Image 1 (cartoon, rainbow, N blue to C red):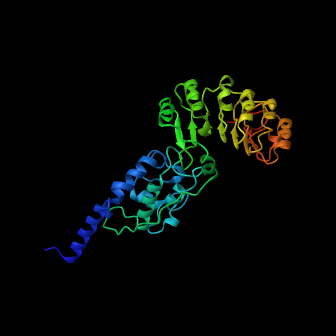
Image 2 (cartoon, one colour):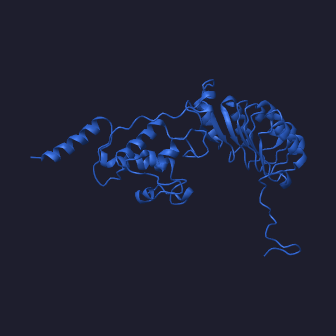
Image 3 (cartoon, one colour):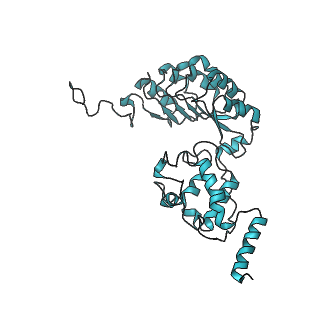
Length: 324
């Protein structure tokens, strides 16, 4: 005959199973580890450890990283893993930074596991249901309320062309489209236009994007962040940005833009960050733009026009001698 403690343990496991939950001692192996494997290991695994953080083993998880302890048993408020996954979708530090963000149900699972003691399977743990997670309402969420979510067929077409598409609003209506590695850029841009009102972030960095494709940008009327770095585009693209009244961030590093292109930005009152390393813009051109946009932070333009210039590539070299 089973002893009373043994009987209680068996009944506890039966209750968990009836409620659709894994037995407490297997929560990590059956639910937490697969979650981390899918969403975190590409940046925090054996091959890469962003922020000196690994999440592919219990010992690595408990060691933490630069952001502090990833998991503190019983204390979700002290666990950086939970803190970073619950940041607003438009926060630059939100995790994961690649792919889909965790759903509220997945965040609830992490929180519940941590509250219960973050057991890795050494023994049974009483899993107390944590308070449901509610993602904070963001500016993007407010904008998204007026936008119809894109259809699955349109998103599939983008992904089939090599685009990385990530929802950045709670209702999945606003999206980040990364075309850096799109297989057929013309087709990918056409597919992007098909969901034009949904695109708030667009990344073309390092792609073969040119001025001949600039009209696509002008059709993305909800665009707030645009990466053009290391493309061969020039002023024609900036002229299209007059149709993007909510643009906040623009990276033009290594492009062919000039002072003439900067004039097109003067009407963008929402623009706050502009990156200009290795372009043909001048101090005078930037000064004129700053008169129209006094809150704009310009980085990487001619050194004499900046308070935070790009690093001097000649630093450490003596005049008349080549650096060793």
